[in-house]
Image (cartoon, rainbow, N blue to C red; front, side):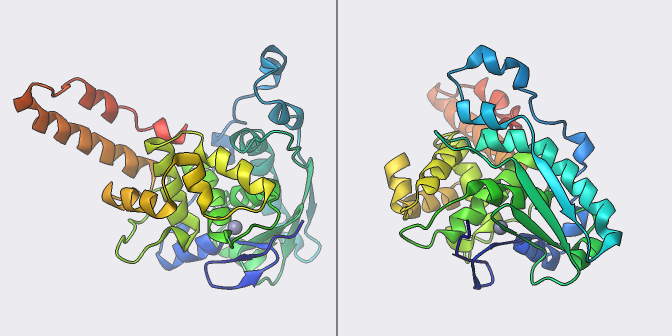
Amino acid sequence: MLLRLNCADGWMRAVHICGMAAMLMLAAGGVAAVAAEPEAKPAPKAEAPAADAKKPAEPAAEKAAPKLEIVINAEESPESAAWAEKAKAVCQAYYPKLIEELASDGFVPRTSVTIVMKRKYFAPAAASGGTISVSVPHITANPGDLGMMVHELTHVIQAYPGQKANLGWLTEGIADYIRFWKYEPQVAQAPINTKTASYRDAYRTTAAFLGWMSDAHDPHIVRKLNARMRHGGCDETIFKDLLGKSVDELWAEFVAAGAPSSPAALAAMKAKTAKEAGANGEPKGEAKGESAPADAAKPAAPAK
Ligand SMILES: [Zn+2]
């Protein structure tokens, strides 16, 4: 299914233009450092064995978890086949976890995907239906950008129909949330300039907003947003529906909280807040002195 959305550069596409974030990151001088190290990320929770034991949990995830078949088309650029094999391994290893992260009732994720290596392409990568197209020049310059494929794979299973409003920013934000807050939480992110940023910026900014929201309001908010988006007909009121606050109110909270741009930044921010609360609370005798270090010691919380 083709989706239409505005991408970061203002293009209206009937595909998910991905790797825009990578381009932005490149501009910021950071993408080359993104080493996806697929082998270091064991296929998330091999849940298959336990599947029967917890039937009521997530039937959609259990059904689809088995395997993702990936066909590589490197006809245009045979020299890129080796990179494509690495990308295939990343996608296959992460797919069960991705399905789990974005599980929703009745949704059956596709079981096959094609990766097409393109000698010339308008973006670093893009997803349309079950096809992920990848720019060979981009991966030649950024061979470590395998995390880009997790972003693309997220689009493959988002499978959103049309929305009431253009929520392309949320579509891209969820894809980068999966990539940077779940798959590559260790990757440092540039600070968000809260004077100019908006939740509509998509990609990393929206991903950070969602990461903070998951911590501050509801650990399952991304899954819930995804489920609603899959139904279609959404507009920005879904935030009010799900969290009781408008997206603008939530953004104001995010900014007031320091707009943490990564799981590590969020953990540091919470540690600082806890420390200050402890210090400020002492005179009143409500300091909860022990809770400060406890909060500070769970940096992995937003990235589990
Ligand atoms: Zn994208």
